[in-house]
Amino acid sequence: MHRYRGSFQAPNWTLDGKALIYAQEGRLYRFDLASRTTTVINTGFATRNNNDHVLSFDGRMLAISNHAPEDSGASIVYTVPTAGGTPKRITAKGPSYLHGWSPDGRWLVYVGQRHDEFDIYKIPATGGAEIRLTSAPGLDDGPEYTPNGRYIYFNSARSGRMQIWRMRPDGSGQEQITNDNFNNWFPHISPDGKSMVFISFPPEVPADDHPFYKHVLLRLMPVNGGRPRVIAYVYGGQGTINVPSWSPDGRRLAFVSNSVLTEEK
Image (cartoon, rainbow, N blue to C red; front, side, top):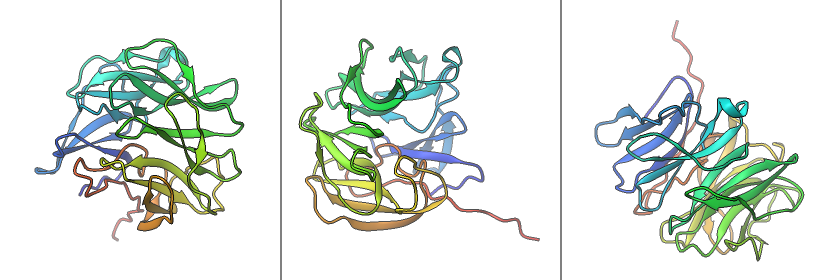
């Protein structure tokens, strides 16, 4: 659908199904699916955005992670209207890497590094005190609410390999969903709440890393567990499906595949 000779990452479908929002070299872009044209989204001073942008369930707002100069470059969570505008700072502490928005619009969930440990936190979408949801040793990452708000799915390396877990929105009832030899990252729940897609790295990739330019799998499985089914073999990794990437009708997925282009001589 779109090709760029540099790096762009993390396509996120808009609520009307007419466009994708993705990150490219610190800025966010809107890709119109009908015209195949791109436009920059005005995020004001936030021009060092990483690939952790999330749309609110009503489609009106974007939450972003921007590397703020005033915080020595640490990632800070902000919100901004989807059409563009001045970002509002949400997290007081960094680094904080955004990943999810609650269906009722009240909460944001993100990964925060505090005292050399990466855990999952939630915070009111208007700002306030952060609430720690995980405390197990090892990296916890990629939190995302289910469309009904009953669970937060995430990935965790607490059992040795990176696997998919879920918990209640208050952090209780943490349970492992996948258990195989892959390192599984970034669960994204389908709009009907029945399926999830995630990216799987081979065993030789360290459990706490999700690098670029690897042979990875996109796999689909029921949200309550089961046997994953491969739906794509991809050369990618970091930025392939970092954000919720289902189309609103649940029929398609947006993702990025990397390739090396060579000049003809």
